[in-house]
Amino acid sequence: MLRYIAYRSLVAVFLVWVVVTAVFLLLHLIPGDPAELLLSQGSIAPDPQAVAALRERMGLNDPLWRQYLDHLGGVLTGDLGTSFRDGASVAGQIAQRLPRTLEVIAAAALIATALGVPLGTIAAIRAGGRADGVISFAASAALSTPVFVVGSVIILIFAQQLQILPAGGYVAFTEDPVQHIKLLLMPAVTVALTLWAVVTRMSRASVLEVLQRDYVRTARAKGLSRRPILRRHVVRNALIPVLTVLGLEMGTLIGGTVLVEFVFNWPGLSGYLVAAVDARDYPEVVGIVMTISILFVFLNLVVDVVNALLDPRISLVKS
Image (cartoon, rainbow, N blue to C red; front, top):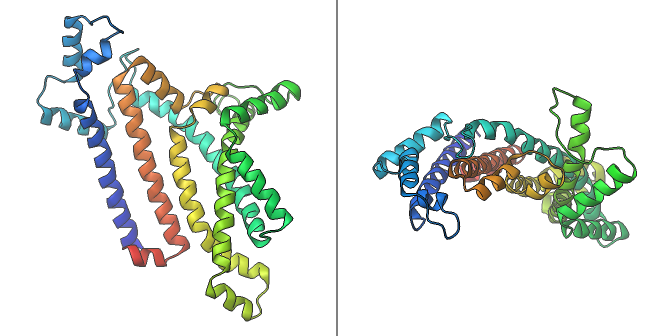
């Protein structure tokens, strides 16, 4: 197991290096002068002196190998540069906003897993029955409903009609824990709805597959009741593909909660990325993209380790 974890960690480090290098190369593969593109406004050509100053500020006048080493060193030391808009540290802004987005995603994942795995298991056990039909229909409806529609409906019901939750905004947990949880609840539920549908459908398919395996049939032949079979043999093995898909979905959501953050006025990382792209703030865009990519690689590593703990045969095969 330790050898497998070490191997997966080395692969993750290699992937992070590939991401950092790819982001650096993309700057130089873009046609034209990056500094000129950043300063251009429609058909109005930028001031040549401003372009020259920006090139010097971005280090574009240095040799390519020097630029790459500076870029790599900045990533290793956590120095992602400063914003063109306000001169603020990009790493500082990411460190401030990233936990807010991760908080929404983590809460949504807990809700989705707590509801999706049991309901998916029930649907698999009663495949073809009424419960299976109701759960599958609800999951399909949730999966096909856009998040901004879900968010708007939730705000309409709980904030405007029932008036039991605030419509949106953000308050730090240290300032007002109760208000923070109230503000977190609706964004988390909005994101959780789609995750729940994915987890439910994957749980149903995975449990159905495990129920057909030989060791489950052998356990039944030995006289074991349904509950011990489900707890010891079925659910644990069925969780492996569920966790894999859940990890991939969470990685995608790190940069994909733009609409949710916009609807609920939640100051997270996704909204920060949209603002940076709109302002053509290169250091912010590069810093956010690298952060999201690195977190995605880290989530895959965590999923691989958890899967190996659930099924030690994975570590024996892949190491």
